[in-house]
Structure formats: structure tokens, C-alpha cells
Image (cartoon, rainbow, N blue to C red; front, side, top):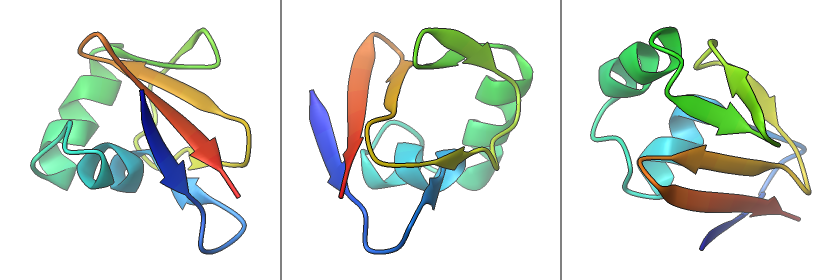
Length: 69
């Protein structure tokens, strides 16, 4: 499980995927979201700009990212 520590109050989904090395670009994150391939807290999300906050858990490509403060 990858852990991303927040520097601000939130991080956008696309930025989190790139920071974790699961997306090489914002475009890749955008298409993954549009295709419904990403889950946040167990629910499919379709917006790459979704704001993630402390405690959120992202699942993509069989990998898990936890957002912490």
C-alpha cells in the first residue's frame, strides 16, 4: 500500500495517481477515471479532479493508495 502524506488540505485524484507512480500523466489518469477504473473508498469515481482528503483510500490497477495528513 502506497501512502501519500498531504501537504495541504487535499490532493486531487490525478495528482495522487501520478505521485504514487500509477499514472504517468494527467491524461492517463483522466481516461482511467472516465472508464470507471478507479475506486475511492470502495466507490467508482469518474472525475480525475476529485479532491482526496485524510483517510481516503484509492484503488487502481490492483494497487491501493492511502491518503494521510
